[in-house]
Length: 251
Length: 176
Image (cartoon, rainbow over all chains, first blue to last red; front, side, top):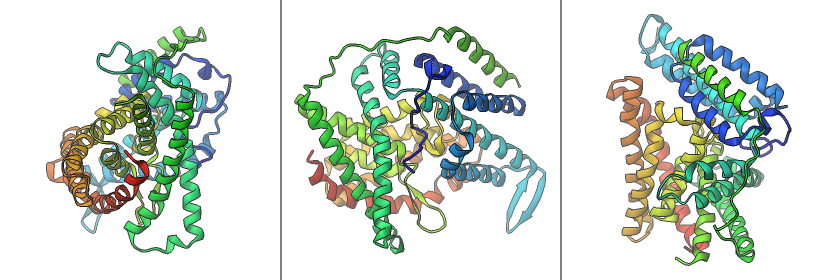
């Protein structure tokens, strides 16, 4: 669980690694909005484009999928929920449940779009350093009144550092509980507490150590603003993303 | 608030941002469908951190999800998610965390008051999520309730009871 997660940054020197993070934010937002009205042809085209970027960035598509099994199961639920609730030409009906052609088509389309959004997010986090995410968020929030952009940026940076630590600790707690036959526990509340309480105690201990380290280094929000290092390919990606998003909306 | 307390709250809030984000990954197998811990961490953030820092945690969680990191349920992300069927639940977390924390604080941070606060908080999430689901998917209200609320009520009740116990045990450890 902790080895590969969708939040893990993988170092590399592909074009996506070098692209300005602010532009990546813009592209992701644009594509996600354009995905809403997208049809079968354009989503298929976008899927193959994502496969190309998976290859370019050195990510292994199928090993990533096997690590995302739980999310794929959720997509199956999304598909089934749509297939069972949308009415139309009946494909089969039994035990009071009716599945229609339209339900199957729409369920498949929605699940596929969610899958594409998930893949886009994975490519983004695999190719973007947590420090760059922090820097870009700080840049975007600067003009927003009443929002302490430096504090928010620090919180994002800390949260991104905590995520793999918590996942590793969750696995350790889960293994320790299994070794003590806790998985045979029938009471759901005790089962939940048995995992969550030790996990929270461990993570708060890590947080306390971090607070001590930050205090001992006289940490404050008043730090030098970070710099951006654009790769020079931003213009091409900017116009390319607009073209892709027009295709998604039209086809 | 001293700078030391402020730093502590910043780190703890960031910890809850991370917990809420990966809550979708930590599943506990209970019966045929495992329960995920995301909304439990939202409720815990509210009763442990209080109204303002709890609200900050959820707001930052939404910001990183909107920014593109795959932290929303199902590994999804992006601004498009807010316009989708589950956008109302995500936005509902904001009033939920503020009101839950305020009620818990107002009633004296006891286990019983935490349970009442979290029940109300969960209802706020559904009050925002179900009508949104109805509008986006053009379902009838009954169908939206049947799909977007009823199947989760038992799991929510279990999570609230577990969260109340966890908060009681955790407060002396966290020392806020």
